[in-house]
Length: 476
Figure 1 (cartoon, rainbow, N blue to C red):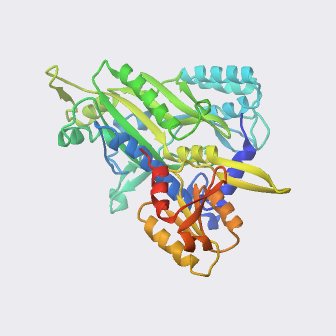
Figure 2: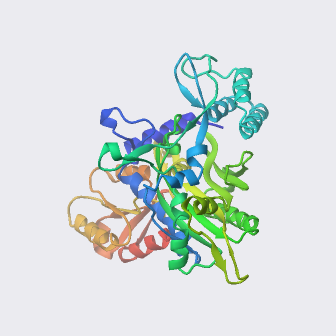
Figure 3: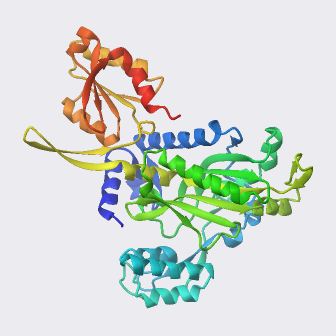
């Protein structure tokens, strides 16, 4: 079930502690566009690195590329985006507010009991599959679904709205050509299929991965960084022999779920959702959904794209995009199984899972803290080094430890305020380990290590700190 209070608390926490800011905030912001602050940028980079290494470093038959955002406009004609990349929209005549039809109905379904909500969503899926826009409008009227602003059911007809941003390329406006900001990163992989296959001497089955920005003119963008107009994707296209796509589709479903579970998130927080309405390029498709504060939502898609993309690019470009299979002495256009995960949605998933408010009692006193229980390998700051006082040579010892550790992982140094307040600040940004340098350190070369999750403390050798942290944060 949706937990709007938790979502609002996470948003406020992200602003207060430097994770995520509203874009152009001093100018009252830009809707559905966000900037990552100093800790959010580190968290995002760590997630991206973990995905990248999982896909390329840990797989012998997957390589990575970095394709340009701008592409020849015919790419988007061939891919079907110009003709098909649209969502059913509806406007409320009284408020002039526009909604994506599926989001409007889904939001209403969340207010119903489970059986009625599921039945409503099933009806919606069937109507969407049939592109029955009149039926969708009637479903909205029958269920008395109102606008959140006006409170009325005074709706326009349902119609399609293309989601691509367009711009112009060229030095003179009159001679400029219309191009698009890419709405997905996959097409950069498809148009480079032969370049990579030949230069890398890749043999099917093999994959091409990339991460990068994509842009969609979402009319209804909500849920914080869950749905944005400028976002980042982590995609992998796996090229297979025709007829084997079901085998590889099942393989990547299982493999990607294992990756999600490796983040320390329980199986009960995930579920597969099979698509009722398939995209124009797919013969099988499902989503991995996570239980966000606003309910189960897609974080990753796994799609069997058939040979749609390569065949269309072959047709529109006039260039052969086939693979010669020496095992069977035959040319063919490969089929593709895609895994596509939203990096920003994954950041939000990790934040949602990690965020916890705690009331603490000790020695008859009540205290509270907000802690972000990030997996140590993903935490923005891995180690905080805190001298107990600003004198007696303790800062110098702390700085020496920072200098030793900094080349290996992100560290933080602080000497201001009481040690308790410093611990709380590190809890709030998700630092898994805090080292306190005290007077005993100068006597026996030991330090106090404090663990974020259970707040326990122990003495360890100063010389063992770096290796201990390295062992705890290793990805593989």
